[in-house]
Length: 197
Ligand SMILES: [Fe+2]
Image 1 (cartoon, rainbow, N blue to C red):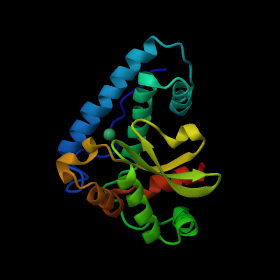
Image 2: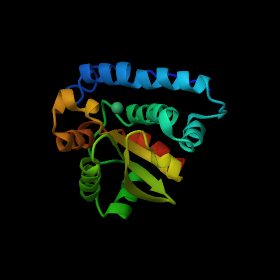
Image 3: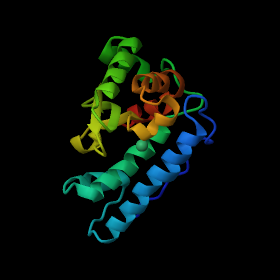
Image 4: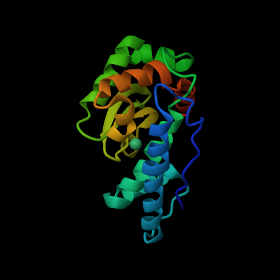
């Protein structure tokens, strides 16, 4: 199986001023692309077969190391692009709204917990909304790790590596996370993932 850099599901300028075309050009075109190129080099020498990217992530996670790091980062970034929308942000509609109230008490409580999760991830990593045995919760993961390998179903993710926000927010990770939720989060994608959880 070969990794393929997906097209961004929006124009590079579409998320401005919340996420700049410059950030997306480097993040998608340089960082994500490097994971794809390196991952494919390592996969060429590995004897691994998988019929989906999710299966490949789980398979490469067993040994860890550089192969998993690149495959995991390809999965995480592909999931992140889909977690963003030019018409996103704000409180959700659809089935996810009631599930969030049930799990966190209210949308504002969810928002506080999601931001705290992203801020609390020391160093590089990710903050996720996941479904775990039918219940929504916040998970954080370091580097290329993903809750997929722990049997959870990812619903949404925000990248908290510095490369995701430094050009637009400098060191202000809490502001980046707040802006992600207020302006960019793609609840349609979340509802689709919830339906398949
Ligand atoms: Fe990233």
